[in-house]
Length: 182
Image (cartoon, rainbow, N blue to C red; front, side, top):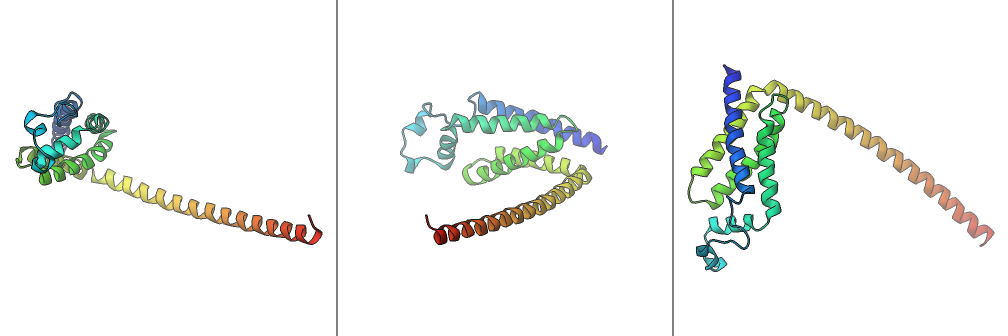
């Protein structure tokens, strides 16, 4: 049963975040630069509401919109396969946390917030169902970090020793130059 619940959660998030990602790319989200709604464009910054101000700011850069939309789509597609589902979760969780925080701060309606929270919880459910794999990944990352740290320490010591030898040779050379003359 766990397998079916997880698959349903992954498909649900896949479908909806693909729609959101495509919506961003196809001009369906944010107030685009040069294409502001008249009720927003006619106001001063001081009078624009939080939502419209945030929506206008986010829509100012098409590169940003592409980045967010494509990230949502890539993360969503990764959810479809068992081999990449955890990568998809890792891509989508930060995006959803950002959306949740954004919605709490800027929106005065809560439908989008509720959806983002549901997607986030479904991804957390996927993580929970794969907790042994997640623990193994964390263990491997911890070991890699330890190995990198040890390797870095060895490199620093090697560079330090080479620098010390260089300084000794340079000092000896300068002493000889000063004693013997130019």
